[in-house]
Image (tube, rainbow, N blue to C red; front, side, top):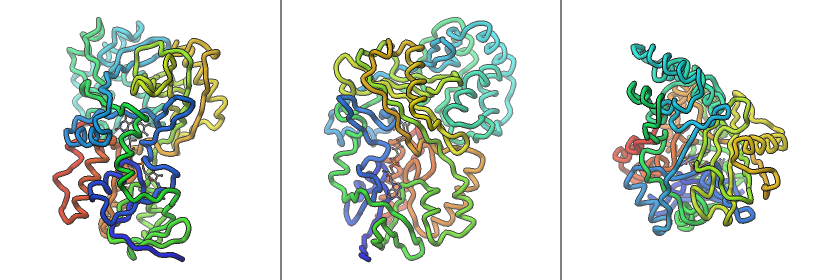
Length: 451
Ligand SMILES: Cc1cc2nc3c(=O)[nH]c(=O)nc-3n(C[C@H](O)[C@H](O)[C@H](O)COP(=O)(O)OP(=O)(O)OC[C@H]3O[C@@H](n4cnc5c(N)ncnc54)[C@H](O)[C@@H]3O)c2cc1C
């Protein structure tokens, strides 16, 4: 069988792998990706005039380095997007974040939420899990009606099954004054867990993937090339066609669990730890509609547990070229995981999702559908359950010994956005270059560095 040598072997040509190679000036680096395209989760597809990202993507980075980096990748051709998000609950539209827009919550629930919030303001306990965090932040009635329901839909687990490491400033913790005022009227606070200001950006052309082309064109990417097994001790990979690749440095952006399970020399304790890591997956339902968007939202969170839809996004509100003129592209995410499987009957999901969009007045009628596609996406978000932290410790100790560099949302098994992936890639490139990379810590990406 053939064998190759490279100084830096990178598993995965998503944003993380591409950004590592870029920050090494693409010198003596090779990226292996099992897919037939680069960009990983930042991939976009053009279908019948509609551009679909792999789940809704927008850059809300507040980090100057990342902002400049991305501007450069699209040669300055990007849109500044003013996003609007809302919540849907049993026929009611509630401004985001709903905890400071209680005035749109129907009675008697509104009063119950407010009273439960006020009655628990002395609750100063240190939260042991996300359920505690919610109860302390919002009071039990709001917590159980809204975020707990959303947690079951999005994270596929009960809030008590999650730690609080990932929360950061993703979930807005309101002051008493904000909640009280928001129960009587609009206080004009339209922040979201990601969007700190209005400075969100999106490539002008080609979907979110527009950010990836320059990096990929300059890199040495081998597509349709799966890394089948890894011998960390020998610094050797085996590819799908049996080729062995010897490396000096290994960077992995593939799912951490799969990396460990593909290794020939990880001890049993590390393999057992890896088996405990879990991720959500999701169905991406792309609904192409032949009339313009009816509602103003860029995306919507759906709280109703009897609905498939978890998050709904409107593609041409990310980038105006994402849908043909006078049409709207609506993408709906339906989540699953090892804890609770995604629905497998795609036809039922498509029918159900369209019915929900009609009920929510986001589509006029079935007659307006151009097409509805449903696709299973095997990786969504790493789940911060209570197994994660001890498992990560066991795995990191082993990989550190072999100098393996982990980058990205799935490589690091953290809830990283693309900006944090880019910073993390820059840090790893600095380490490979001989430094410690400490100056490029992902904590500098203030909004998206959880975990
Ligand atoms: C629904 C959703 C919405 C999101 N929204 C946003 C957003 O609005 N803004 C934002 O900044 N971020 C967003 N993100 C996060 C963003 O997508 C990720 O942070 C980023 O894409 C992770 O990139 P990555 O390169 O680390 O991983 P990936 O993109 O998954 O790339 C890893 C690559 O490794 C390859 N691979 C895996 N196994 C192997 C193997 N054995 N051999 C060879 N190749 C392999 C895969 O094919 C893949 O191309 C979102 C994520 C999701 C899921």
